[in-house]
Amino acid sequence: MKRLGWLFLAALFNCAVASGPTAASSRPELLAVVAASIDQHILPSHAALKDSTQELHADLKEWCANGGGSGPARTAVHQSFERSVRSWAAISFLRFGPARKNSRQQRLGFFPDPRGVTLRQLGAVLKRKDPKLLEPGALARQSAALQGFPALEALLFQHESVEPDPYACDLAVAISANAATLAQELADEWTGDQGWRGLMLTPGPHNPVYKTDEEAAGELVKALLTGLQILRDQGFEAMLVAAEKGRDRMGLAFERSGLARAFLLETARSCAALVEKLQLGDFVKANPQTTWMDRWIKNALRNLQSDIEAMPMTAAAVISTPAQGTNLVRRGRFYSNGLRQIIGRQVAPTAGLTLGFNELDGD
Image (cartoon, rainbow, N blue to C red; front, side, top):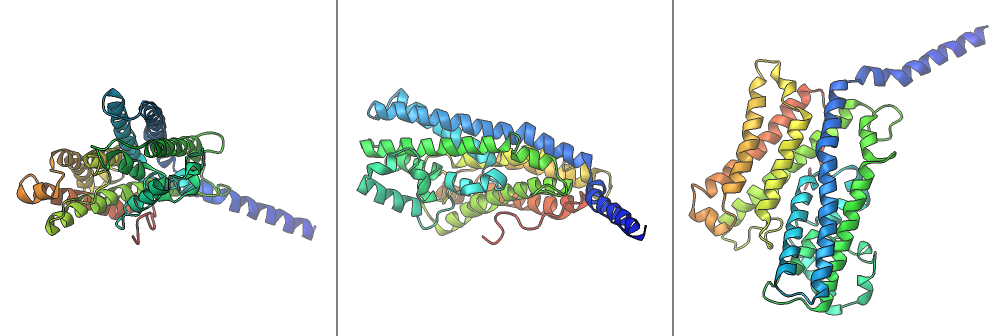
């Protein structure tokens, strides 16, 4: 009987351990905003990237098959490249889960690249003209600098007046095929029975990644803070430094193709959409001392987008037009940094979210 009593107590203890964390941390309001963020923003954004990269690959194949040149085929390539860049901007800061696996994020968007690794490696490849590099899947085994949108941009926009030689055109087709494959993998691994969506919506003691609803919601807030940090550091701060030093180029992502503004704008729009789906303002509305944060966040996100649309995108113009140049860029830096501070240090703790380090900490 004594042994049976101990077994009974042990069973009760095990049940308490197994059910306790889930019951104690179950917050359906968090699970609801995570589901809305995934289903209404993240999944459609991944689908858009998948579709746009497939279109880009098809347009490049047609253009190269006709020997390159100007005209409608080249216009189609530029348009599908812009759609791909815009789609990439919407998810490039979601650097967890499928994007972290196999370094997919870095392989699609090798940036920043202060040492010019992409151009150096592309130059070496174009000099060698190794046909094996054009075989299906070959690029996936190469440096990340050769695999994604920055490398493709360099090929398409490095010398606008010079028609690409056949090998360069074939290389562009191969890079676009690799990008389309990566985009397909990202989209696929968010869905399905073993997809990341399921992991985020079923936190618990047996979930290998998310034990609580707070952890799942915190993952999305960390990604949001990464997006705001990209805007601040790789956008506005880079523009101000370039202007102060009188550089011809500001070192922005997709500056060579004239899509730097589009990339920044779509990043800001995606951050705003994530804030809306996460309903972050709801966590500070109840307290009269913090309700102003909800209004400030919404106003800052609106101004951030309108300022990006209005600000000049060359270092010379930023310096020469202070009212519409330097001031707008500085205000963009202020808003992106302020949003990070308020969301990370005020809203998230109020919501009971412990964020830890984000993807760019330590860069």
